[in-house]
Image (cartoon, rainbow, N blue to C red):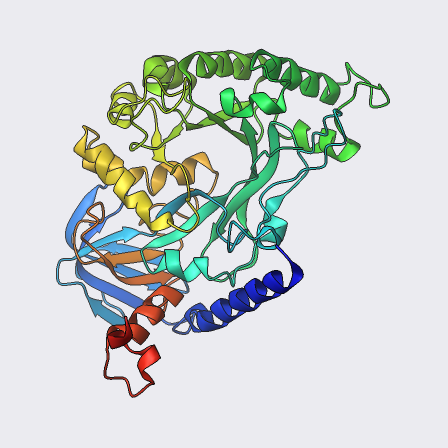
Length: 436
């Protein structure tokens, strides 16, 4: 792309951002009380679903959940029996880390520092430092009931199978992540190019990294792969520390991961897990949660031969904690994660567990269960009022609250829709629906 084309693309991106900027307004004042009454409250807790229940919010937190609650001033919303849920988990995404995947200057989720054949492993790389809360992707996701996501550090060519660190961000315009960092690792055939074209070498590399952290390979060794900062960072994930999220699909690789994690005392979770159902009892015994894509049901490669739409149901039946993550363009289409959960329910996963996979389970897995994922006193008042079943794509989010504040139900996409939907706008014909 020549410099003139790049300038034109940059101008278009800036115009797009400016067009959607009004959707960043957080809404009502933060100290105001809010009472949502007469709702079908899906708490995502042991209390289950409460019919004709009220939720009282004060100072951005849930103050009470019950019946006959009084607001004592502030805003009162009559839900008229509609479903109320916690805001939904958007999956493992790059929201705020990329605007246009084809324009590298807007993409910040990966690191490539390799020099020739010398591998450089940088677990200290932290993608949350590049998070842009004013991204146009933020309001596009949150008007659909998505209130939070985990930003992924993705391994890439010229990097290593250890992508780096990410973390949970709320889509309320806050610039900083919440909760602990998460380390991202790729294994299996997708990462073979990062390990000498051998999946067997992946375990050799991971073992060497731990040997470096624990001093069996000195920092001045010519074979050392880690910087001092990398050793300090990786040490936090060994011995039962932080969560390591491993993208892996083949059952044999998942079995090996469980053995390695047990030996090295690493708290892992599986992302992808197309064949996870084949080792479900082992995952349940090790208490390893799995982020699945229930729509990944075809043998697209040799790591997906056992893929099927009953994966989530089979894992749940074995006692595995199940959440969801999309394959493909998860950032621009985070709202589609509801479809994943709905399809898992259609293929045998209990409905309440489908909702839990979008709320409580990812919050527990990612270390933010004290803040997000349930409707209970003390939690952040991140809530969604739905027109119908939240796992049915025909339903829409009627209103989203983040920290008890009603957000504008607008995004660049809704503003484009409204701009071009009606022909009788008084604008030149080129701007009217009749010009299509």
